[in-house]
Every structure is written in C-alpha cells, then in structure tokens.
Length: 292
Image 1 (cartoon, rainbow, N blue to C red):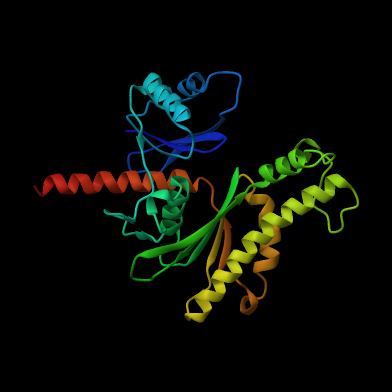
Image 2 (cartoon, rainbow, N blue to C red):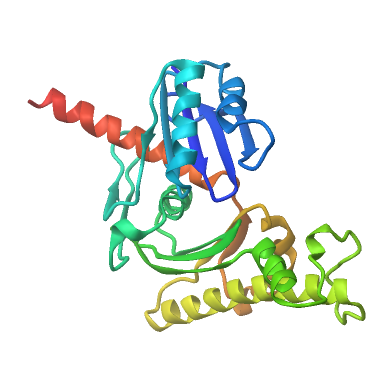
C-alpha cells in the first residue's frame, strides 16, 4: 500500500511516497513548474514507480497546475488526487495520533493549506510545546502556535512576506540600476558591505532573519507574561539552512538568556502534515462506519 503525498507551491511541486500510515517516506522529489517540458509528462514519468494506490495533497497553485497534476496521477497510477484544505480544527485519532490543533484564523478556510499542514506536522513532532514555524519559500511565512500540555494547541496567527527571491526581484524590477543578484555568484552576507552585490544579499538576508527574530521575540514575551514556557523555533523551506546560524546566535545562548527552548530545521513539514491528516481522516471514517 503506497500513498503519493503532494505539496504544490507557487513555483514547485514536492512529493513523497509513503506507507499507508504516512510513517515512512520514500522516493521524495521536487519538480519546478517552469520547465520546457509539460508538467503532466514530467510528473507522470516520476510517479510510475512505486505505484501509488492513493494520492493526497495540498496546493496554493492555480487550477491549471492542479489539473496537470491530477492528470499525471491518472496517467502514472490510475488514481485521483484528494486535495486537503485548511480546516477550523484538526483532531488525530488512532495510535500515535492523539493530536488536536485549533485554527484561530478569523476565516479558517482562508489560511493557506501548506501553512496549516506544516503546523499539524510540527505539533505532532513537539506535542504540548508552543511553536514558531518559519517557512522560507517563494513567500516567507511565520506561524505562532500556543501549546497546551493536556489540551488542543492553538494556531494564534502568522505573517506572510516576500521570500528571498521575490525581494531580489522587486529590487531589480523597481530600480533603474540595481542587478538581480540571485544570478550574481559574488554576492555574500558580510558585516559591512562595500559593493552593491554584497549590499543587496546582506540586506535581504537581514530582512528575512530580522523578521523571524522579531516575531519569535514578541511571541516569547506574550508567553512569558502568561507564565508559559518559551517557544521552540522550527525552520523549514529552501532557505532554512542559510538562516539557521544567524538565528541560533540571536535567539540561543546561555540558557537563562535564550529566547527559544530550541531551534531546529524540519524538512518536508507540509508533506508530513498531509500524511498525518490523511491517515487521521481515514481512521475516523473507518471507525464511523464500524459503529453504524
């Protein structure tokens, strides 16, 4: 029994095959949506082995992209895709899935499905802890989750900002002479930039790291006023490793001075959350049919 799990973002499609409990990932991959070959053909070729019998995914892409993915799943394995959206409340059932998460977004359905499923996976990994989940992709998103030792965790809110590449693009597009330094290999993060490439790379990096740091510090202060433990910071996404060292230096240190209880990189949070959600809903459906 193999599941195909999908995380369809703004610029790329990520996937993994797992067992039917969503516990073991194999055959992970990523495909950029912008390519000379049709997306359906590329994905169908990649998904032929191992052959999946179910497909679950979340998406922030346009309908045309989702239709291309659905066609690829049909061509590769003869299966449809069950798309999972954000929900007001998640409750896991079954062995190892005693997890509950409340979505306190004003309109829960407006929350990005990728953000929601990343939080589900984060709460499953660190049950009962307050968390800040920072994802650095096309956009940078930062979510705050208030943990409860014996009750449901609560997603209290989060922020969305342009990611690293979008910041670079905006400078190149909105100015007359600044280059798009994503394609300049000499730009580096330095203490005192003395050239344009370093100045742009350093400025964008500090904007990203500083934003995450500010959200963490404000959330940690709120928790401290309520006499709650410090939050844990989870970094995920393509730029996570670049941000790790700077944020460790700013948020960790001597234990009594640390702002966070820990700081880790978590790969494939969205895919892991999709697996947890799919498994929980199938278990719930089975239990419901057995009690009728």
